Image 1: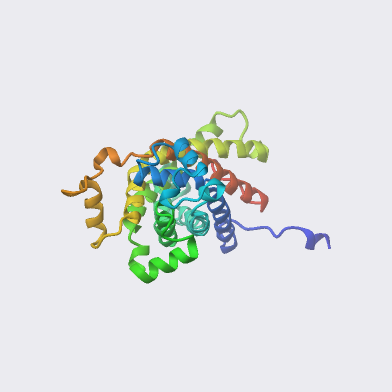
Image 2: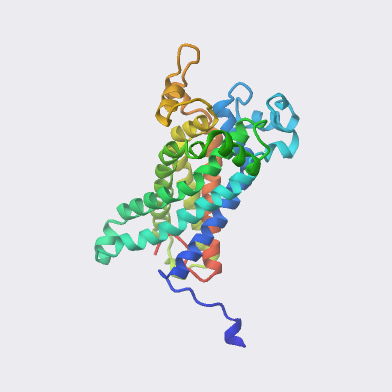
Length: 319
């Protein structure tokens, strides 16, 4: 009976291990992105509806008080939660791919080399593993991101995930759900490379300055390192990926014929009737996004690390 009550040990680098990492990714990404839906809602609208959303605090107040009801936003907490369902489903799927495949690729990409060579080239391995994982993860995320941006920036378009997904599919086709994949890769791959590489190296630097090795630290102490390294990595992520994030929001809001490059060119340059956003416009909403991404990334790494610790696996970062 005692043996039956014990947890089954998860052996590293087995299918069970990667499945556990994928579940940790679902929890960390799905919950955190859903939690910051109000900030994300304001960020997206500050990129595409600048007149009514001049800043983060002003935007939240405008929605909560009902001042932007003419755009279709509900007032109060209901209005601030707009887009929570596609956010939850989409970023859960992304987390599955991001963390699960990162752990797989990180191990597999290091196997052809000796331990010393792999360690000396760990930044390159982390970069290749995270970029490869995100390439897959964004294919899972993209349809839900398209619906999320559409209902958040045009609330009268649909109530949420189910009717928004069905409407886009029926009226614009499958291509509309993947129209933003190129800019999404442009946003997410640099973001994820920075997220994982910066986290790994910052965590490594923190552990190097602590007087006792990681193996002798409590799980609580280790989780403090995980959150700190994750938050600092998140700030770097926001800056690196912000121009592409702005383009994703605008591409998914824009309803016009033509391919993705035509849409991006129109957004950037404009035409005789509509001015383009130019280089400066790509940085709209950086303030709220930096706060959002820093908090988000720190919490994601914390939840991921906490889940791994709970199931008996080593916490991420450091040796």
